[in-house]
Image (tube, rainbow, N blue to C red):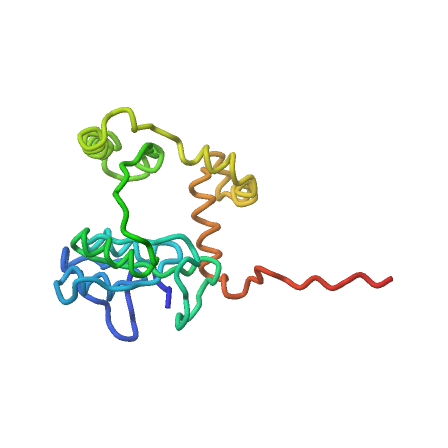
Length: 213
């Protein structure tokens, strides 16, 4: 069940983060991430709606992957937001992560192709309290070393989302305290939180009654 982005559980207790025992493990799949990070298992499954696999993976220092929605059956999953709920998985070893992916996604083993494009969303790094340049330099140097400078591009994700998802303006119209700098990223965050909270109540394929003649 996809619930709680922090990984805290008041009913059964919050799993201890092996990477930082004084910090939350992230959620919703905190138990799976902790089990992998603590060496109890080689890999574990989780549910990702708005980060339920990726967030605890980052918090606990393990690899985490969320595939595209609906490519893996959600059979047996208690839905929270059916249009977002997606099976994902964790592993410490990238080879294990890849093997699990090939099994779940039913992929054939082929030669690995190097990425042709690598985008760094500069405005996302600016949200962090850590200086953006300090963070992007690490990523930039790693990409250039592995794949070459030619594949690297810098983008503004907020501007890209605003051009591709015009409906985000509906969320920015309700900004607090008259803040005119309410970004597309903030609008997307608000939209995703609403979907996560009320997703199971949203009818994605409504039956529209026929008009009476």
